Image (cartoon, rainbow, N blue to C red; front, side):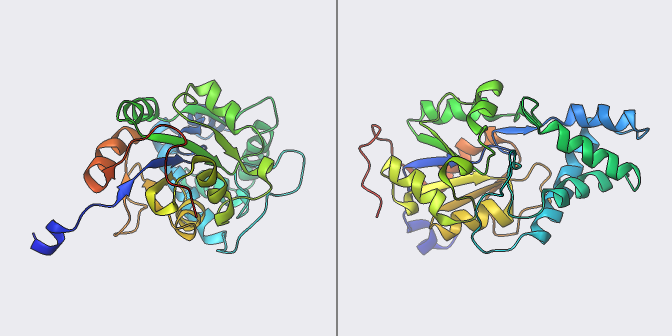
Length: 263
């Protein structure tokens, strides 16, 4: 190991900020398997889960890097930077769903998102363990989501709201990722400087771009190790996150509100 690199102090970390959909809560892959079976397409939970990465890539390809505001409409999707249809189409096509069944499946996805129904309705594997471990380590945490107004409800119903100081919702705030302003809203509320915070999310075009634009570090959820860029910090499961943070950062714990003010 290079001696100078060994002697370089690790950056301080005061807070962890999480995405909601795709990070603390996941899509109901079980429902997708059942829905596709009804259309005559046989698949498995694992196949659908891996296909979701293809949806991310399709979404990234359609997404621009310009700041965006929430989509207009009664029930905009969880994230509207790129057409959500691209995300779902990429997922469905990866498991063999093609026209004309693709149109029917996309319509069922849309209906699944109409309240009170939830599509992002399952706790992400390892999320509870991750939040509990960070709390035990004394780390502060909150959530920033491109949500349709139901982010807190999604987290409450999956049991992953505990341990978060607050939840920032894009529709409520009027600005959404990757616009850095939504991250600064959270950082200001916590009194944490962006260089002392890390954002954890699942989309490179939205979460990674937005967090870095805000001056934060970023960790990507990459369940199969085939989505992250070579130089990108990533974990396959959220319960791997506390160990990664302890390895890469100097963890600074503090009472809520006692951190240096964000500037």
